[in-house]
Picture (cartoon, rainbow, N blue to C red):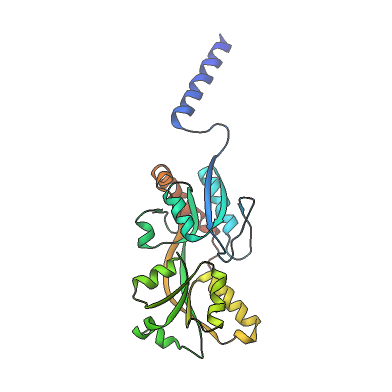
Length: 249
């Protein structure tokens, strides 16, 4: 009789597990993407690697624990990431700056960080006062294709925009005077400032903070339809792992 009761309880428990969609064996497997060549973040064998400056690996470990999930990551160009997520081939992409255009077809999580965008320019060519005025919109600007910085420039009437496919292509444009300034995210601005300090030949570069945006994760339509509330709760909790102190002086 005791054996029969145990068997019945086991059947009932498994029926509940199946009905609720809960896996009794292992965490759900999710497909994630990061922006190729984004400063401070790298992927090896599907895992985001630890680094001392931004806390990306710690944030992702926290998110996986909260979701009871394993996320397999890959690095792709920005436009490709957005397309695959829109088509539900990727579940989640990170770190992503939020824009109205992206919000029109993907679901953003609650913000994880508040990210600054910077203009980078030669002090011998431009002065910060020029960038606060309308004349700044007539300057030649280098920016990464598909980035939120590009969306800002296009939405605010900048007339001469030079797009590149990789963040590492930007600084050479400025050094060769093919553009008058760059529009970049905070991690790249920090990287460029470090290069300025290390190389006297680039010591005349200056930075100007022109915009601050919410940033975090974009979710595919299918993943968001089932897990948005859970994801938002996870992101809010995992903010404690972000390293918010900027290296920019």
